[in-house]
Structures are given as C-alpha cells and as structure tokens.
Image 1 (cartoon, rainbow over the protein chains, first blue to last red):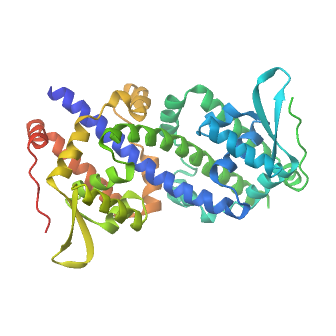
Image 2 (tube, one colour; image 1 turned 60 degrees about the vertical axis):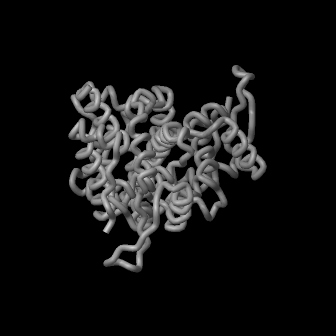
Image 3 (spheres, each protein chain N blue to C red; image 1 turned 90 degrees about the vertical axis):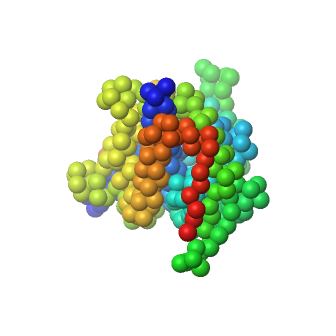
Length: 192
Length: 192
C-alpha cells in the first residue's frame, strides 16, 4: 500500500512537473512562432504544413497530420486554404492513388524561404533561454530526454520524419552559396 | 558572412527542433490532461488555477496568471467561474489591499484531492513515454535542459513558485496516513 502510494506520488510529481514545464515552454514558443509568421498572414498550422510539405518534398495529408500533430481534417482544411492562396497544390502519386499529396508551388517555396530569411534569433525566447547552456557547454542542448519521451509517445515514424526534415534543412544550409542562390532563385524538385 | 550564416543556421535548426518537439509533447500532455479532468467538468486553465491556489495556500490573480502562463483576464474570468461553482473564494490580504487573492473553499480542496486520487499513470503518455528512461537510469529523467530554458525565459520567480508547489506536493505525499487522512477529511489552512 505504502509502496503503491509512493509510486503514485512519484508518477504524479513527474508528470505534473513535465506538464507544467511543457505548457510554459510551448506557450513561449507559440507566441514567438506567431509573431515570426504574422507578417505573412499565416497561422502556426499553416506554416507547419508548408514546412512539412517542403522538407518532405511533397507529403500526404496523413503525414502532415501525423508530423504536424493536428487532426487530419485540420491538415486538410488548412491545406485547402493554402491552395486557394496559390502556395501549394494537391496531387495524387502514380504509385499511391488512395492518398492525397500536397506539394508547394514556386510561390509557396518563395514564401517559406522568405520566412526563413527573416528569422531573427534575437527575438526568439528559446534561443535566448538556451544561451547560458550554450556558453556553458559550447553547444546548444541536445534535449535528449525530451526527444526520447516524444519518440516513445509518437513512435519511430514520427522521429524519422522529424529527423528527415532537419537533415534536409541542415543540408540546404551547408552550402552557403547554394542556399543563398536557392533563396534568390528557387528550383523546385518535381513530385513523383 | 559565412560565419554569420552558420550561426543563423544553428539557431534556426535548434529553435525549430525545440519548437516542434515542444508542440508534439504539449499536444500529448494537453490531451491526457483534458481526459483526466473531464469527468469533473473542468478545463486545463481551471484545474491549473485550483492547483496553484491550493499549493500556494492562496494566490493573487497575478501569481495565477504568471505561474499558470495565462493572461490576467483569463485567470480572473476562470477564477470567477470557479467561484460561482463554490470551489474558491476571492479575498484581500490585510497587508496587501491592492491585489485580489483566491483561496480554495472546502469543496474546492475536496475536488482537487479527488482529482489527485483518480490520477491513473497507466493512461498518461508522458509517464509511459518516460518508462524506458526510468528503466535505464533507475529514476525519472530530470529534464534539466528544459528546466534551464524555462527558467531563463520566465525568470527566477516563476521557478520559485514552480518548486514551491512541488515541494508542497512532495511533502503532503510523504506521510502516507496523513495524506490519506487529508483526502478523507481535509483541513484548510486559513489565508492571512
């Protein structure tokens, strides 16, 4: 009984601690994210959809929903709005007629890269909040515990898509001239 | 120029990584939290207000807003609703006539403790997601990097209130009989 209560206590303390930290962290991130994309008349879900479609070089609505952590109907409805603004188009893949895919239009890619270009770390709470850790350890924190928990909740697929988008972003930023050129004059890769 | 672009790249990768992890983590927590308190007809902000008022043994509306990461008007409006349900009362402190304080009524304390009692870790994603870490290290992860970032964003006051509520919770859970007794027959500490 005592042992049982102790483990209830431990579970309760741990989950409430993570819940409240997570709420606080997300609220700060949400505010910064909204401020960042506000001039482009996008909400977080819309920007997230553009981001996912871009980094996956086209994505199914269910990929968008899964990786963007939103309902399929939300993913679909916001994708429709982005289509109406000419930022993405819907398509079917030759080898997968069941799923609807989205891919960015040139206008969508331009907008996404423009948003990357105006990113200002000096206004980003997480960037500023992590500075003391960076100074202490010489690099940004890995957030390995947070990653592990998210991986265990959402599964390997989620983490694969997650890592793919960051590997892609890292790759594009590696070649400075290539990246700048990409910003100036974006070439789209065709969806197949 | 190249160095500048590299640091933009690093900042961008880091902040987007944390943003997307944080979104995913918070969405899972939000869902569990809502499910947990749904039978009691409370939303997350209302439960958070009860939690803060209880652990601080009475709290000002601005403390609630700060620690609960909500607007002052949100904190006030939801507190009003909780007052209408007889779960808390508004008061002024003798030594601080400017601020409005809230304290739980007996009914509010009973409800909060009832909610603690029905907490079921087997339905909690963060608890389940942290199990592999617990098995590996023998304890739940400390989430120190996340704590440090939140601390740097929200300041020492925030962390003090945060730690106070957990120290309080830990203390109450220490004496098993005392805690059970408290659940059975709660004695309220008067606000001063």
